[in-house]
Structure formats: C-alpha cells, structure tokens
Image (cartoon, rainbow, N blue to C red; front, side, top):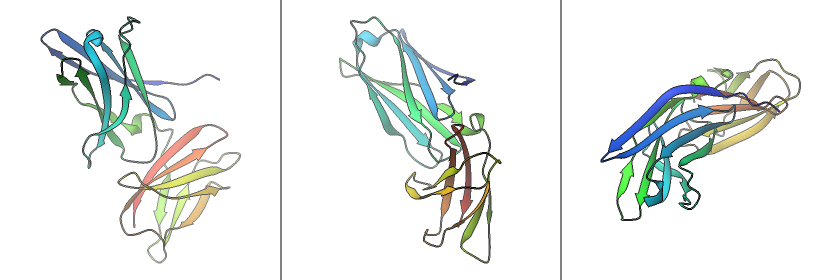
Length: 194
C-alpha cells in the first residue's frame, strides 16, 4: 500500500550554546509525525513530546529514550489524529543527563492541511439532532464525537453519506466530529455547538 504524505514547510530550530534541534512535522491520513534531529543526543537522558491546543496547556503525549550507542541523532514520534481542534502545537523537551531541561520552539500544525475534507454538520434548531453530510462512498462510515477536552462522547456507524445523529444525551457545549471510512482509510472532521 502506498502511503500519501503531505509535507509542511514548518521548521523550528533552537540554537543555544552550540545546541541545535530542528523540529518538523508531516502528515499521513491518520497521524501527525513529529521529527527532530539532535546533535547532542548523547547527553540526553530522555525526550518528552508535548502537544497543546488553542484552549489547553501543554501536556506530555510521548516519551522517547535515545540510545547513545547507535549514533542515530534523528528521532520521530507518531501522534494519532483524533477529533479535536483544527490547530495543534507541538514542542520537544530534552532532559539532559546533567539535570538541565531544554525546550524547542513551539511548532504549530493546522489540521486543515491534512484533512481530505470536512464533515458538513447541520444542527436542527427544533430537535436535538445533527445531520452529518459526508462524501458518497461504498461501505459505511464510523463517526465519533469528542468534547473540546478530547473526551470521546459518542460513537456510531453510518451506512449512508447523510446521517441524522441524536445528540439529546450530550450536555451543552462544543463538539468535534471525526468520521472514518474504513474501506479507504480516509478521515473527515468537523465541529458543532449544542
């Protein structure tokens, strides 16, 4: 299977006292790949990969332990895409063996750059239902609704490109929708307010 990558020209570089660390991001249809090169990796105990949204603080989403015996100074971390904000921010924290902590420059990522398309969502003012409009495709879609905090709120399956979903059990607030088409591997995103 050939994977299609979308490359961004987003690079962040931190250079302090001879320390150089580049961060770049690229996408598959299901993940953001965060990559960096650290020429001082032999003095690093571990790396923490952190992510935040426009409305949250940075949180650690991964840990990487370099092996100085390999001589490999290029590292990557795969962050699986789920529903959430349309803009994410990444940074790498390097914890050195002498106790020093270094942070990379924050790298923004726009999910609009990776999405095949957006889910069109129509909210009925008379009922507690939303209409999901997806591209016509063979097979079914799996949809997931997430709260702004990233918590999975509901999931279901749609056998058609237009599906009404009852949202009366959801509390008032903002929601992000992810629709996955298993046959093609494509994901579609959208949001609505209840």
